[in-house]
Length: 560
Image (tube, rainbow, N blue to C red; front, side, top):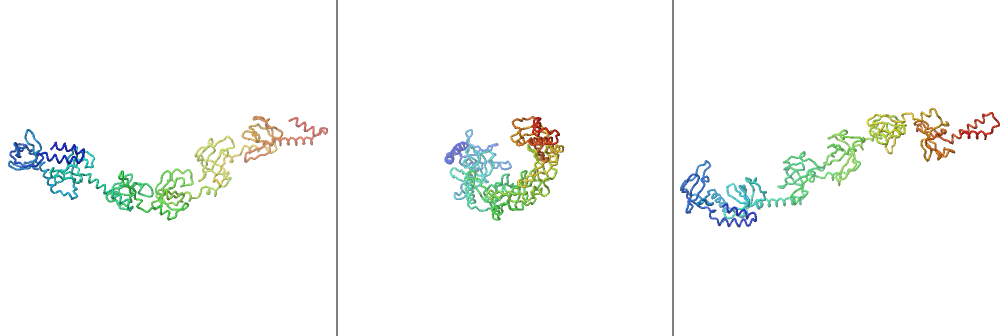
């Protein structure tokens, strides 16, 4: 019998049909595989000698005829059925157990109906290179070739029970072939047909949740398992199925696709529900409309708000408050809070809805205008320092303190004078309603250098200074430390600009003083006129009648 199995195994691996042929021929040729009767002639220790109509008695292991209590169940003279399994020392080797198995197989074949469904449950008893030896509950043996198993070969298969289909029951060879692959193929065919019907019908069907995972949940729809991805649970967006459902729950779903190659059925819960975005279109919601929503989730970059019909809108952090320095949305709103918001974007095709909370709040600039005027002196906190100045927060709005307005010192910079968080006192010098900007000044709270200078000087006074810079439009003169004056080109009089250079001393008359804007203008032409008047005054007051007017002017000019 061992030789038969070895041959059978080799052929079964190459071709299932060749295996059947070999099996049939082998069982026909091997005489020892035939069931025969014999009389027990002697019982000696562990061996029982049986007369099987041979020249010598066959030998049978006594253990095969023990009852459950370990007692021998036969005696000399009893007739038993055996199978010759081989020979040893010239004596036939017998098996009572194999004879019983063959009897059970023969009885099974006798009752076999080819027209019946012929699906049974078998347990894998052992395996060989060709396949698996299986038994049913009655102890009948069956053979399942590997090619018909639809199983991944492993020792762990031993002892497991499978549903199989009988594909051949041969009375002559007393053998039965079974196939699990036939069952699997038929089940797959049924599933494919069921899936095709589900998809083609495009109907909403009820399923049972079998398993919940982090990426979705598997739902049984009429014996077919499909996956509901977490993005197909709600119109709000990706959802955690474990927070909404439990295994065993019934749920309405709709088939949306099937991957033939991977055999994956994709289902959708949200597709089985009315599309809320369609409802939005029908309700006529538009940009600018005010709606009441509930804050459902807060993130560092903003918040998601629930419209109450499985639609979420997004409230960006920049749309929560007019305060540009908002760091955390939770400082202004909380989860579960109901708020009124304004729709600022609605795209039903992209299923995107953005809302604004600050648009329904009074603008800080408008609020600021109600209580502040140009010229007001206020206190504020330095929020940002830049190369061109500093931003000062006054209440809920920020104003700009430009470098040139921070100090009368033209070389002063905010970054050298202030730091973030400092409280400073400033003067409002401009409120630009169109640009909604506030300009501030710190230097206007102090007397300008020119204001101090003007306490001792007035228009018409003759002054001396040092040329600091020469431009196309005029000459800048430093009168004192921090006090500059301008001589416009047209006020140079008879002096040629090309003849002047930085560092030269120069004399001129004060032509204009603006202490508020910290400006002084000088004029050499005015100086000349002043000197002319001085000469005339001298002439009028002179006692020397012989000196002519021309002589006096000439003398005066020669002195200069």
